Image (cartoon, helix red, strand yellow):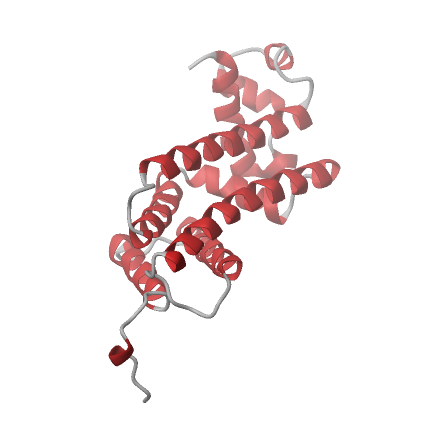
Length: 203
């Protein structure tokens, strides 16, 4: 890992733990084991560093989802959706600072950066929503998914499901998180899965 990458990783941890205002360039420099001037040779100020951390996360995840799309293009839509859901929550388990940073950036971005942060997060969210919407469209076309709801509405619902489950893990551990995750997904998928006519019953 090069020095710039190390700075970004340490800055992420401090922004996630202390927020934008509480994270100082001096602390980040000390953790990175370089001088404060050394950080300024890569980033002109704290605002620039914060945006660089955000851009790094967005680029990493965009690249990941593009590669995942290629790897799972022949899989069933149930598998593609389950894989997307499980991966997202596993990321929350393994990288709580990443999730905390992302949630804080959405809820309370730095005041001086509010517009640019909001625009970047919105663009990233729209990219992922389009990815999910495409999966739901494919599921409908293949006859795997049968629902009156639009694919865009389903994409938003699935996105909210992931966001909620991710935040739940940051705030409190699941009692049995693997079983819980599978149950959450199965309940979601159960409302989408196409059924034969004789399986539908009025109660």
